[in-house]
Amino acid sequence: MKNIRVRFFAIFRENAGVETYQHQTRSETTMELFKEMTGIFPGLSIETAALVAINDTMAGWEQQLSDGDEVLFFPPVAGG
Amino acid sequence: MKNIRVRFFAIFRENAGVETYQHQTRSETTMELFKEMTGIFPGLSIETAALVAINDTMAGWEQQLSDGDEVLFFPPVAGG
Amino acid sequence: MIFTITDTKIDRDGLRASLLNPASGACVMFEGWIRNHNDGQEVLRLEYEVYRPLASSEGKRILREAMGNFDIQDAGCIHREGLLELSETAVMAAAVAVHRDEAFNACKYIIDEVKHRLPIWKKEHYVNGDAHWVNCQRCANHAGTSKALPGAAADG
Amino acid sequence: MIFTITDTKIDRDGLRASLLNPASGACVMFEGWIRNHNDGQEVLRLEYEVYRPLASSEGKRILREAMGNFDIQDAGCIHREGLLELSETAVMAAAVAVHRDEAFNACKYIIDEVKHRLPIWKKEHYVNGDAHWVNCQRCANHAGTSKALPGAAADG
Image 1: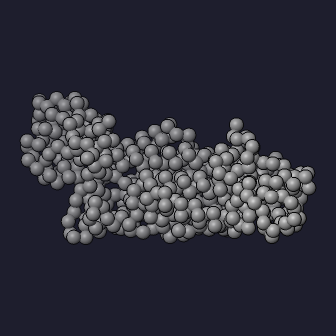
Image 2: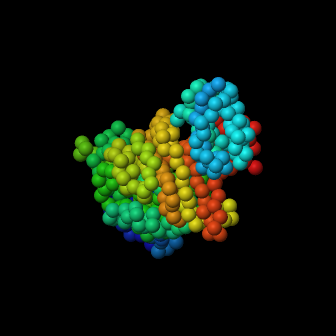
Image 3: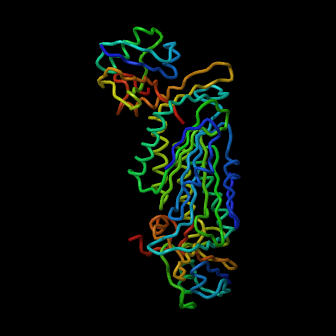
């Protein structure tokens, strides 16, 4: 089991109803973790072009999680 | 014979040594007139991408001259 | 090379002054303005949420990429966060070069990447009282080539 | 749509303000600066000669073409004449649109055409005391398609 801190942004935060969430998980990848989150937070759903970061570095959806990671879930960005 | 007023700009003016020149000509086109000018002003020579205007309207090098026209000879432009 | 996130008015003259130098002949600047309509809705104001640590590091990375990919001499970008009113400048990007083509291409590259890659989100507040997070449909195609969620629908 | 020739400092804020409107989301601005080198020569200052009547009418025509060719909402351009020092702005062109691609394309079109078509000439004054009329070799190709002197050599 890995100890992961999850952070949601923008519409993900509004849909989850929380900004941060401390979680014990068997998920291996960021994608598995996100799917787990949609089970815990029913308002949350997969969005086109969502991005993910681990410990303030952009990551991929197959990236492996490590104990103690902070995982940031970004809905599709819309800067400018 | 047509009465034409010729104006030279920038390096054409410097090479001709005059800014304006009143001229009686049998030249039919702006091109013929320019060639005539190179005979009158030896410093003047044909330049890449020179432009010509008649009576403050951009013209072509085959354009016909009319009595009383003011013909403007522009060396290659270099705005900006 | 300046990349800044700010919650106050973008200092346009300051960014330009930071790029001005006697070896450059061309300066191209882009400004994104808050406009009063989007997708048929009347917009009242916009709210920008920015995750600063990553927006800042990724923004600087984009400027370095622009310096590497184009023959430019300097580049800069400033992005607003917080609540913005109509006609305010939300983002400014700029590039300077000896010749203009490279400055145009670099400036366009910077703003395109900033819009696609920075962790920034905007919520539109409409005249009718609704509000809505903008999900930039076009991002789908672009992000799809790198780190976007697989299986997601692309721009229709 | 503003096109101006001026012998004093270009009013950058004034041009931008004339284009600012709540329906536009993108503003692209180009500035041409006097740079300290050209073709291996150290430049001290530049002198712009402008034939105002035609520069003005042709400049306005270019802006109208930009409005017709691109999906923009407004455009403007200011060009200096007379003696200019290093780092001064010789020309500014700008276009505003709903979306940025059209603003970029229109701004680029305006400055390209201004440089090729307006009766404006510049004389470079060098650090070594020489002076030289710039004959913009690139113009040859462009102008060759329209009204340039036939038979003239193209850009090597």
